[in-house]
Length: 200
Image (cartoon, rainbow, N blue to C red):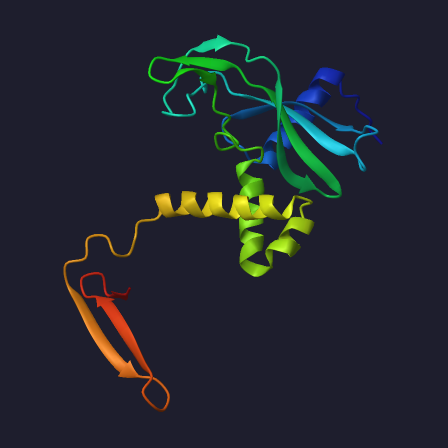
């Protein structure tokens, strides 16, 4: 039986590569991952130290690439999806950027929306859960406040509205039909887009 020893730097690079793939965050580099516990937490958490890739510093308000201004003045934490039984947090020292139009602001993190304390994946998971369960149930599953779960769902819905075009855009030729539904005077009105061949 063969045994190979892996030196520590290679082992660390391999672990960071695995966590980079597990996080599935484009534009981020995992530097370290460890399980931390403290008297202030009821259960230990998986703390993943990450940083944006070089050349990925962007202004969070206008989205343009900008040069770094300084180191940013402290660590920031974002809640991520749980890994097994561990609560996961992304931790990063985010630098500030100098944007001529927006002034000096903290650089945009590639894994989150500006001003959010949660990663995009965490927010998407909460929003998806809100489609199949009540807000109270969703708040208990990832251990967030009831109101926070609702705020996350609203933010994700606003992002989706901005990304998906409205079915009422560019309507030029429509058809309207009214048909009876069940017995009595109950009617359904159907509006059809004749150019795209779909019900609106």
